View (cartoon, rainbow, N blue to C red):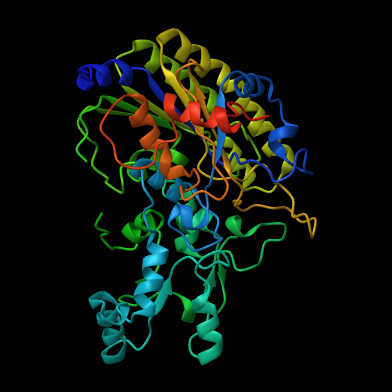
Length: 445
């Protein structure tokens, strides 16, 4: 007869020791020592030690595995949402494409009403949202093909899509005072270009947002006068991040829910207010690490999650030296968190939401590379190797390969809690099978 197990007691015991670290923009380059890889170029002394001593594997962080279109790069919002959900969540951009293909969006009351208002009243309709080669590019093609409508303003999302209450950035987007193109600016930091003078400016009752990123339109929509509408959790948790990634460890990780859950503690560590992140690539990472250490040492939280933002934010600047400084600062901050977890008995899990800093230059053109990557990301588990180690992906297997959506099922598996989804924690029977096949790796070089 199988011995009875008190799963609730086990869950309470093990949950107290679970800490998850999210290193933003920290991918695994496709080739070792690749040119302008800010991760291997930086001081990785502490991270190398962690990699050598604990179970490590990689996770898919782009495309279908992230609920995106095939081959599309992931981002911070999608990454945190997938991790929090514990399953593949089809993203709004995919759902919008399906809606268009099935002609469902043609019946959307807001879209139909806006078009009707333009026809019957003011004959102008502004469309305001994100356009890029990575996602939404059909509008530009449609405008050119139909010879209808024109682009009247262009600006970087650093200003118009700010969500951190940086009023000085939103003001630049709203005022639209800068009329000349600023040289040496990558697309994110491009200030507003007014193509058609006052005629191109938004008038009352003319604007329709089409941005599929609700978090990025919330702040500017509120300023323009719109109102944007915005799991039961019994575990005592804490979430820690700088403003740039605060929404990711709260709103996105919680499945797009704004309201703070019961027993959920949040810490927003203020960032330095430099104009761009190449000015101080370290940001406030050490303050984040110090807060994590403080929370862990109290040992009253069953699950603690934090985000280290510098690799991603510095990676977006396109300045290799800044990215190297950011990854080195991240390595240094690990010295604060890692020992605290060991002392308090926490199981430390480290991963990233997408790649970025591992490639700071376009290998074909030599130009700065400022976008996310489709590279896999590391997944590291600090714990007793006799008890905690990862499965490995098997070639030609019907089982799916590891992805970000498998992180939370793995955490729940560690704490012996009820779960659905795909856990990457290897159990004794699986280890025996893999040892027989010679597949068990344990660590990643």
